Image (cartoon, rainbow, N blue to C red; front, side, top):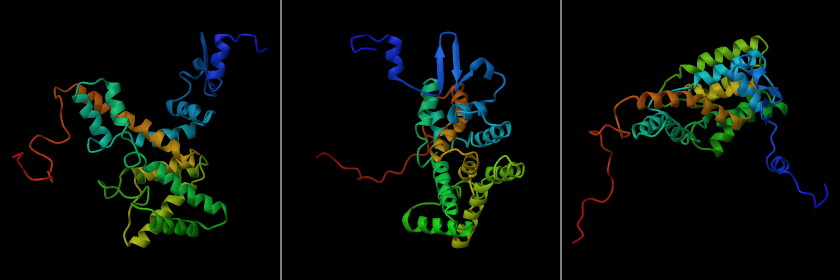
Amino acid sequence: MSGTEKKTGRERGEEWWSTEIIEMRPGMIRLRGYEIQDLIGRVSFPAMIWLMLRGDLPTEEQAELLGIALGAAVDHGPQAPSIAIARMAATCGVGINSAMASAINVLGDVHGGAGEQALSFFGDIAAAMDEGRSLEEAVSARIEKFFAEEKGYVPGLGHRFHPVDPRAPRLLELVREFAARGVIDGRFGTIAEAVEAEVARRKGKKIPLNIDGATAVIYGELGFPPPLTRGLFVLSRSVGILAHAWEQSQQPDRNKGPLPREWLWAYEGHPKRSLD
C-alpha cells in the first residue's frame, strides 16, 4: 500500500488491537481457533478457562483437577473480607455487578494473594532443585532466606481461623491420586509437604498447609505461572461472592454495617475538648 492510499476502517482496527485469543466476525466466533459452536456442550467450564489462558485444550483429567482446585475455594463465609463486603454492598441497594466488583477489588496481597505467593515460594525451591540441589537442601535454603529477609508467615501455611484447614489435606490427597495416575508428577505436592515439615522442625510445632498452599500446589502441578494463581482464586471466590450478594439482596436489611449497632469501635483519639 502506498503512502497515499487510505486504509479501511477494518484495516485500521486490526492494527489497533491484536489478540491470539478470539477471532470474531458477523456469524463467526472462534476461541483459540475453535468454533464456539463446537466447544459448546463438549468442553467443560474448567477446560474453557484452561483454553482461554493457555491456548490449548487440557486433557479431561487436567480439566478435572483444575475444577477441583477452583471448587475448593469458592467461599469462606462473611468473616472473609471479600464476602463481607459483597453483603454490605448489597445492603446498600447496589446491583449484583457492583456488589461483586466491590468484593473482588479487595482480593489483594493480604486477602487473595497468598496462593500466588505460595506458588512463587514453591517455584523457587523447584528451580533450585533443577540446578542440582536436593529437596532438603532447596527447602532449607529457601526457608532460611525467608526468615532472614522477609516478614510474616511462610506463604501457604497456617490459618487464623482453622487449626487445620479442612480443605488442604483433601486436596493433597487428590494431588497424590492424580500423580499416581500420571496426570501430574506430584513434584509441587512433595515440595509443599517438605516445606511444612521443615517449618515444623524450626518452629517446634506443625503449621499445616492451608487452602492457598494446597491450591498453589495444584496450579503449579498443572503448569500455571504464579500471577495466574491469583486470577484463578478470583474466579473461584467470585462464586461465593455472587451467592452471598444475591442472598443478601433478597433480605430486607439495608445499610448493614460491618458490626452490629451495639458493638461500637474503640476510639483512641483525643478526649472531648471545647473550642472555647
